[in-house]
Length: 148
Image (cartoon, rainbow, N blue to C red):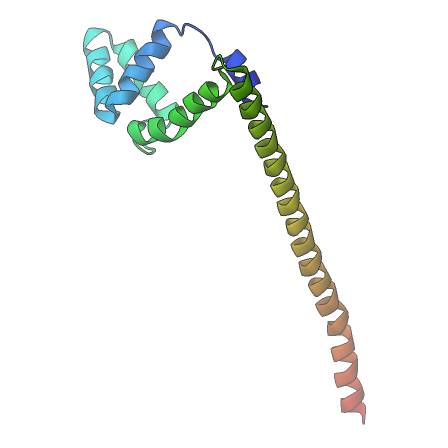
C-alpha cells in the first residue's frame, strides 16, 4: 500500500468518539484514568466500558499514550501529507518519482533480508544434517575400536 492509497482511506471527518480518544491520548494515561473514574461516578457501566477499552487497547498497562501517539500517529499523519499534492506539477512529479524509488528500494531490501534468512536457515539445516550423519559414524568408529 502506498501513501496515496493510505490518504484516500483516511476519514475526512472523524466522529466524536475518535476525537475524544485523540484528545485523551494527547493528555496521556492520567486523562484516561480520570475519564474512567468519572464514568464510574456518572454510571458504572460507562466506567466499566472505559476500563475494558483501556485494557483491550493496552492503554492501561502498555507504554504511555503519549509515546504511542508520538510514534505511530505522527508517522501516520506524515504519510498522508506525503501524498497530498502541492500545486506545483514539477515538484509533485519529483515527489512521486522519489516515493516510487524509495518503495522499490524498500522492496529490494526486504527481498534481500528474505534471501539472507533463507541462507541462514539452509546453513543451520545443513549443519544439523552433518552433525546427524556424523553421530552414527562416530558410534561405528568407537565400536570398531572396542572390537580391535
